[in-house]
Image (cartoon, rainbow, N blue to C red; front, side, top):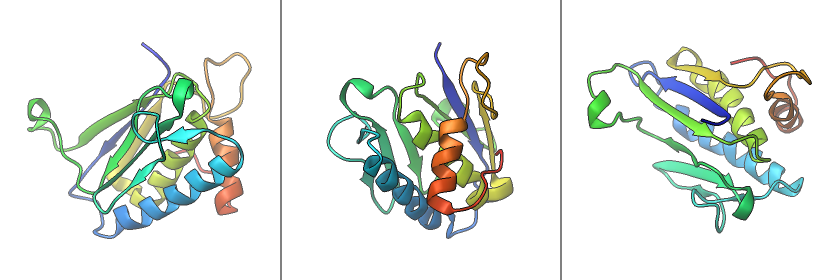
Length: 153
């Protein structure tokens, strides 16, 4: 158990250029977050976040790493989910600082992928001191980078 974000992608509804646009937008988020002092690494929490033509991945860095945020250009289910029409994935951040980048990326994913993606979370959208976790830091990061109000995915 741990603080986690979830998403389902429908490959049949994805536009062919969505991954490229999304990857560039996430690169912007990552670079801005790093400039603000959020420590980010590759999927293992080492080196730098990875961006390729086929996927991108990042995590917190060092002790601030938890689970990898990974996004493939072509979503694929594991064999045990092969019959499902959507591709399910998740990222457990345990509310570590890179959670802001994960939530900002998921906000952007909904903008870019539209109806091809459904996003859910253990966290609350609105800042609430009583909540287990919120998306407020991700919303703030998103709004700083893109200059528009974040819309709940």
